[in-house]
Length: 281
Image (cartoon, rainbow, N blue to C red; front, side):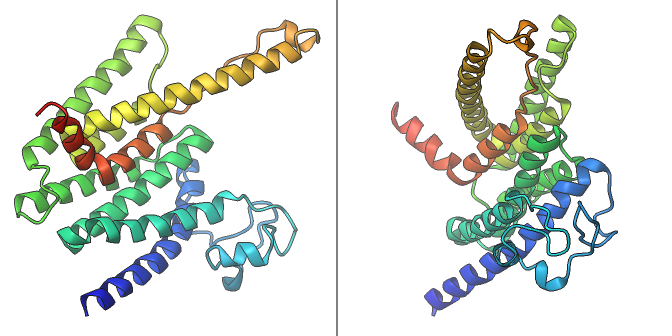
C-alpha cells in the first residue's frame, strides 16, 4: 500500500509541478518588468491576442502549435516548455529525495527549487533578480529551520542555518562593497548578496560553502569557454574594419550559477559533506 501511495505522490507532484511551471513562466516574464502577474491574462507578446485555454496546456500546447502563436505565427521561445518540464521533474525529484523527512520538507524543497528556477532564468534574460523570489527563498529557509527545531527536518540544525545566513551576508556584502570601493564598479550584483543570504539560511553554513564552491568552479569554466570563443571570433574578424574597435565585454550573470549550485546543494549537500569529511575521519 505504501508503494501505491508513493506512486500517487509522484504522479500528483509531476502534474502539479508541470502546471506550476507554466505559472513560473509568467513570473519570469512579468516580475523583472514590473508587470502584474494577474492582469492582463496570458497573451502573445507579439500580437497581444489572448491565449486560449486549450493553447495554454503545459508542454502539450507548445508541441501541438509547433512552437508558434496560433494567431500571428510568431515563434514561441523554447524556454516555456523547458521551464514547465524542468519544474515537473524538480517536484517529482523532491518527492523522491525528501519524502522520508515528511511532507513539510517536500513542500519546502518544491517551492525553494521553483524560486531558484525563476531567479536563474530571470537573471539570464534580464540581469534582474525579482525580490519576491528571494523572499520566498528566505521563507523556505525559515520553514526548514522550524522543521529542524521540531525534529522533522533534514537535520542541518537551526544554529547552522543562522550561521550560514550571517556568514553569507557578511562575505558577499564585503565582496560587493569591496569591489565598489576599490574599482568603482560592481563585481557582484546586490541581488546576488540577497540571494546567498537567503540560501545560507536554507542550506546552513556547511552547505553554503559547498554551494559557493560549485558556483565558482562552474562559472570559471563557463567564462573560460566564453573567452576562448570570443577570442576566436576576434581572430576571424581581425582584418575587418569593425574589429579595429575593441569589442566590449558583456555582463556575465552570476546568479544562474549560484541558483543552480544552491539547488544541487539542497539535494546533495549533506551526502557531499559526509563524503568529504569521511576522507579525513
